[in-house]
Image (cartoon, rainbow, N blue to C red; front, side, top):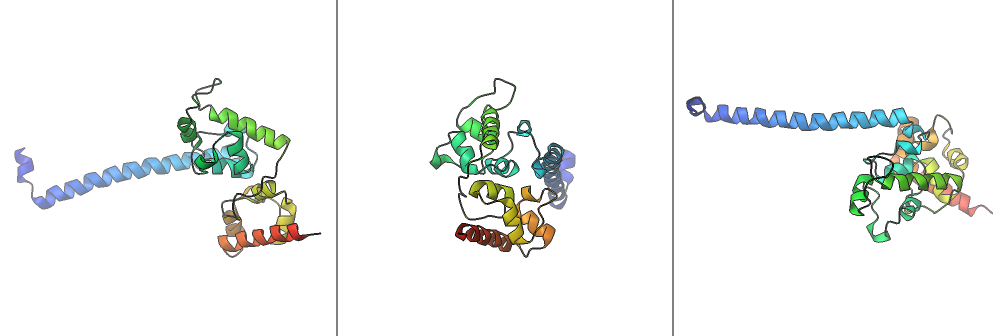
Length: 205
């Protein structure tokens, strides 16, 4: 106690700042590690290439993330999960949705029951794709395959209109990623180009 009293105000402030700094390093370090683990998982499971199995779905994934990863329209997912229209939020994680609607644990393991329902919905969609239409204008987070499945416009046609090759899992890359890979001109430009391509397709006789 005597030693603490002998410290100057400047020294006490310095110690406090060091302590705060250590806490911030710890917090952001944990977040960085989690992000790294998620990215590693995405690559290991083939989620970024459109080859992931439905068993790869995790509670931390959002509805939007799953929709793009598996190229299934968000509206189809929400309808399949029986989520009321006024309570649909594409940025909700599956874990949060499971808690919000009190769905409990899966009978097949220690994970949220909503994952089983979602896996079944994706499997059914793949067996019988339904073009629900886009819930909004084309956005940079959407992939060509997601847009194609949502609108019924062939992915090959969209790629042809953009002048981007349909290869190397390009169909499952978000538009902003495609923009960077092929220097299209910006997320807004590539989104507008896709929107124009959809309009041309619909106008075809």
